[in-house]
Length: 116
Image 1: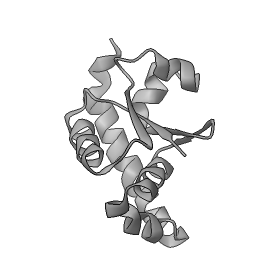
Image 2: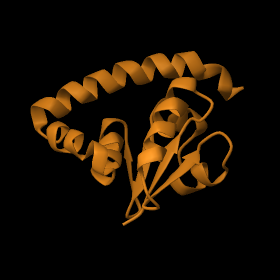
Image 3: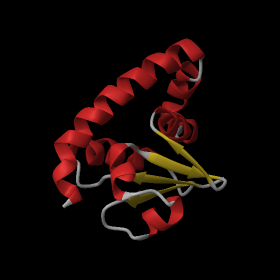
Image 4: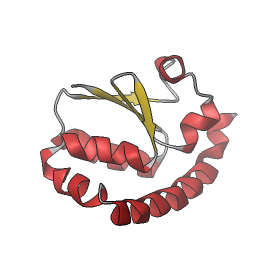
């Protein structure tokens, strides 16, 4: 099953991380830059602010965002599948969720100028 990952390629940190995942992923993951691809807004019905605020994954027509999006990516990349198994455990997922939300807020404010 293929998933689509919607991310902010203009964010240096986001781009670096996604480029790393791209090296180890296969054709089961397609990567969509939210700022340079009109398809992103159409696929999600989300605003530019909502798309910029969190990473999104589209899986079977369902939109998954934030920390859950990472689980979907890690589940499909053999090298990172162990992270999926660790962080799908509720306690560890909670830690990932908190960490992701803090990092996402920071990155959103850092990249807010892209909304203009």
